[in-house]
View 1 (cartoon, one colour):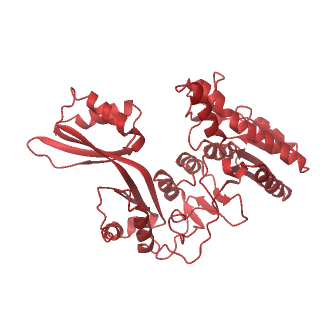
View 2 (view 1 turned 90 degrees about the horizontal axis):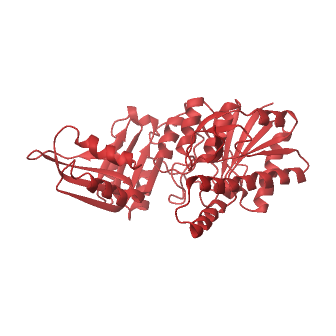
View 3 (view 1 turned 120 degrees about the vertical axis):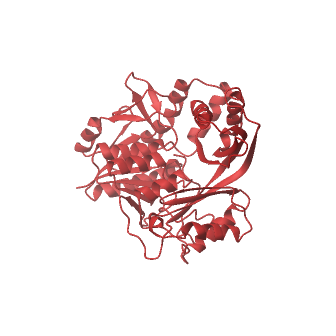
Length: 417
């Protein structure tokens, strides 16, 4: 008998018909002789609808009350799914995050899990039931309901699998695996049979929406076997594990992109120790994440440097920088939006020279200028203008031999969480 954690996202349970299909699939896995724990997101657009309602009544609601509100979405899902399974002749018990023993830090909106005590979940399994847990939520040690932020349900599923020592954690979504790039951009993108934690973590951090980076990081740390599968087909999915088999001649495994990128440049800064620490310390203290940082040459004791960040933080970051002008004098700031970051990822890159050069050549052949570059052992990222993104993705996909004649993509919009 195996213990399997199955996670279903919002679109997988978005309608009564889809809820029934998920329930049937769960029962089939249980009747194969497995213990089944299910983690579920809120149905469809429930979370977005709740957020919209809250803004109509209070544009700036207290974080605690938002957690009280948003946690309801998953509670609706687990109750309805449990009812559906009962109607189909099997046993099921639903648990909110706190009933399942999920403990978090006392931070509303983006809490991190600190402990899982799944005693009640184990008891439900011993009684022959499917255990259904609300994703995205937990409870702090002082009894406050908390939510886990983006990717919270994926992370819940992996954390539960680790705590219960599950044999596998299956993430069911609206695509049937991890692809070499977004199949909506490249119609002949290839589905990967397996991928390493490190490669998947890079792809997730760089814009691939199939798995959330926190979930992959948790799986790697706890050696949880992940499988990404479709809720809508019986196709084999993609295994995410410590080491993946390398295809002969394939150095780049995937291409990811982030469409929400801005660049800020600070010109004429004194070239003295502590300048960068002051600038990026101020940004960090205001909750602004910075990505690529490039400093140009020094002239007459003055330096220029640029950095990228989320387009959502652009105006706030400029305000912060202007606010420290007295501490860090500079000549001017400039900014640029409508940028994208496109990245190639592959564990084989570290031992194959010329990978970056091929990327630069493919981009330049389209007449596209590269504005910034960042590298690591297994990835190369380029910042370019947004308009030619799709053409660049297709050119890179072909250049690295990732095209396949078979189009296996099945699905619709990406899951919310």
